[in-house]
Length: 172
Image (cartoon, rainbow, N blue to C red; front, side, top):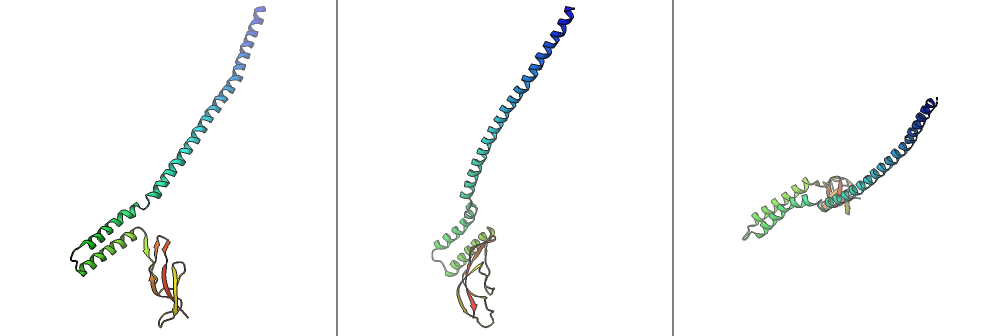
């Protein structure tokens, strides 16, 4: 009988040991999981710092080289002007033709980049796009508040005013 009693006690002690290891194992598992999550958090924080630095470098480069495209398109205009000036014994017609070609090339380059001339002649004065330099009495055939003369042309860059049109407006 003593043998029978010993056997269940041994089984209980083995069950107690396995219960103790089960209690310890979840704690160790959780501790290792916490360590793993802390490492992931550190990696994520480092990655965010790297992304911010890369973004700042890219933004600085973009700002620095933003005019590169326009500058490369204007270089042929510069070349044409230098050729027109360097012509010896230039006839005034050829010189004028060369300057007009250069002017047209420059206008095309600016239009391709989004720069457009603001049309203001005979238009109703609009302070969003125009700057009134003077006001004169209404001439015959004109309406009050319309642009009579353009002093300096204005330009838009996409939807923004690059330079307002300086005009003379008709008024009473």
